[in-house]
Length: 297
Image (cartoon, rainbow, N blue to C red; front, side, top):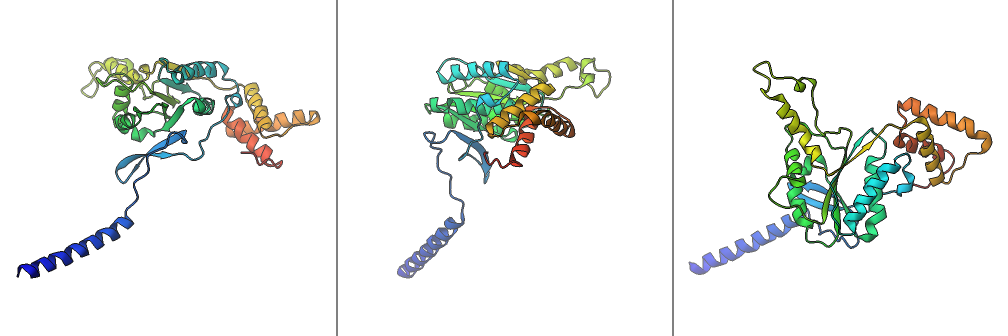
């Protein structure tokens, strides 16, 4: 009897092992740790309920010289980033202002300029900011300097990532890692919507008794960034300068005889888009230069 039970148990275990090996083949493989020696940028993503860092094979970067009409902004963020890379104290940065003026491009330009000096970039979506403590714990032991990049940041009052970001910036009893800064871009200076009625005292059962305190709570997140950099709408001349810069990048020239026609064509493109900005200049240049055979990305 004991021998029979042992034989049956052995057969069962062999069968179970075979089933598990087949299931293991179907399961997604755990991602390999990021090799920061060869990886300069990564994205934080949730896969199967777990957060992982995924290397970016071809980071979208550009030279700071490509960015026109934001010289003061370039100087301020470059000074801050250089201090950070050199191991000195530096500030978390909030870049706010008009769309298409170079906020996110400027952050990417810092990676191109300082990657060889040990700077690394981690992009985190707003919805994944609840994972910030986990992300920081995973990178604080490395010798590299990390910028956690949050693009196009804006919150509603009830979003979970809002409080995690506040705590990481300034407010938790846990000190943030010395090798990490947060750079965020937003079209909203205070990152959260504020309303006209918040300037008045509550006068109904549905209003806060002290609405000013609610307003202070909303602006307190932005105030925890040590460096604010503002971006302003382009003039038409700024836009045209940006267009010419991109034409130079794509190795396309405009003859003297065609300058006026070219200018009118570029402005017409912008008017059709309803904006003059660095982004629109880049889009026009790609169309104009591509039509003339340019293949440079």
